[in-house]
Image (cartoon, rainbow, N blue to C red; front, side, top):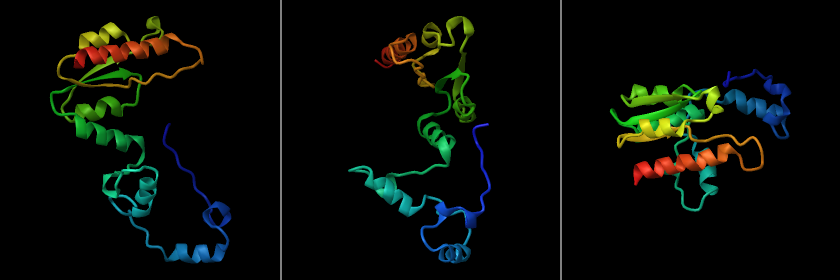
Amino acid sequence: MDTFFFLVAIGKERRFYSEDKNKFLEDFCKRRLTYGNIEGNPEFKAGVCKLYKTIKLDEIIPTHGATGANHHVFYSLISPGERVISIRPTYQQLYSIPESYGADVQLIDLKKENGYLPDIEEIRRLATPETKMICPLILIRFVKKCTSRQVLLSRQGTVLNSRTA
């Protein structure tokens, strides 16, 4: 399970207040509990702006985790009928969200006989001019030296470049 929460006793957790525990608890009890600012907390967004030289407050779209961010990416980039190739196993959202928008989702399952690496020829076969996205293309490097996974990642870039050129 990749989502979890735990309950805490605020009064016992020193990290929630700096010096005056009673003042913190008094202020906390006065706080109105709501869903918060739908477009994101302005203080949070201002903090993010300080990390970059040219970004503006209205250019920041906070999300609740990676699922929300992926939803924004798919919603922004994928239209009905466009092809999305998804490599499994992966998070279900990487094929279910584009499918819900009417995308032509094609799945490639990693196979033991291929060392659990994507089959480049299968990607080439499935990639069409309507292919808008292949996900995920990020492979984890388990060792420091150059591995077949690194070479494959380079080859995947070649497949993408040849389809978009």
